[in-house]
Image 1 (cartoon, rainbow, N blue to C red):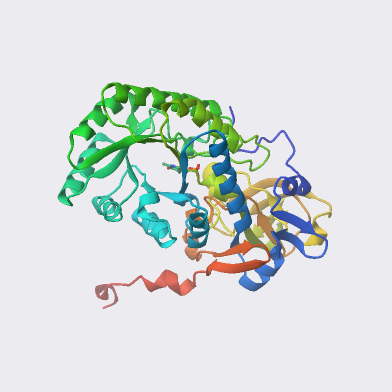
Image 2 (cartoon, rainbow, N blue to C red):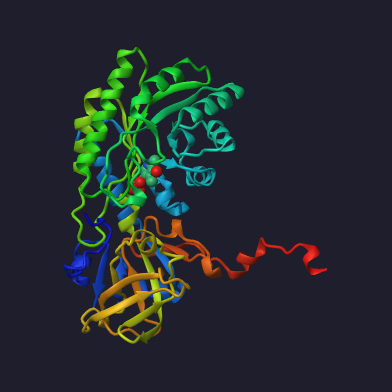
Length: 447
Ligand SMILES: *Cc1c(COP(=O)(O)O)cnc(C)c1O
């Protein structure tokens, strides 16, 4: 079975009009060209330069509220903990904080970012397979809502650290339910062979052990089966049923369970995938976990932030190779890594109005980085392109800027937030000097 992220070569790509029709935050204006909300993207490219990430505040709010409302409509007492790793920009997290979101963090940096964005510790879940002692201490100092422990070894570490601080750490066990979320192999996390979580068969004994440790307050069970889940709602159902059975077993043993954490992973359509709606996820949660009568948490990242962002990039040059034409952009795999890492397909739309209706022909769309993997699209139907033309990669709001690197000594791109007709730079472009500023050459080499 092909990866749902790969583009099947047999069917035609969606047209520009079809891509925009599915994305109400983006419109094509006869004069202003491609607009995100009420702001022409050409204006941002002109004033901020390229490459630049641009996020739609309205889309972030709309999607957060859609999830919240779907959970409420399914009768769940629930909280949403936005997965910071999808997009940890302070403006994005701060906007979601104002909507009432908690956070799911996986490092000290993300914990500090969530706190700086105005999300208090008592709304933050700390996940991750390798939390350091310093990170666990920091989390406890900030009265973390929940630590998701991923192993028996980690439980002992947390217990010792918390006891040393005179605290009881609120710990949930992340179980590995051994289900296949049927997503890309690099982002499936709930199979027995993956590094994540405690085998579900071992979870009850570990939970009992936690209840006996003075440094630990056993909170509940967490599960996260993968990311960009589109066809795998049945995987969610299986996972939630296994978690519910486990909770019943814990209760039968007289162990306290305060809440359950259903994780993240809800997928979005990048090309033409049929992605489940929040109502479907809420239905799976309600069916599996609802009967427990406990508060339910979820940890979505991509579903909230992905469609809210675009990456603006300029054509550096247009090159005719022996058999193909290449559009070389000023964004590279160091900026948007998903195509190189996951064979991901991103919509790519010209920003200038006259290019919407120009004749199309196949082009290879590549970045400037010295790797063949620095290819964004193959055989993509695009208009004739010239240096300076601005293009927008769609659905780049999640795992875009957050995954960027400075490979090839390319500084991190700027980030902009659009809100109606207003917009602001929310991370300035990294100056090249920054790349050199922290480096030094030892004296003896120069002597
Ligand atoms: C990555 C991750 C998430 C968010 O995944 P999305 O696919 O972006 O929703 C949630 N929880 C955990 C534990 C994760 O590792």
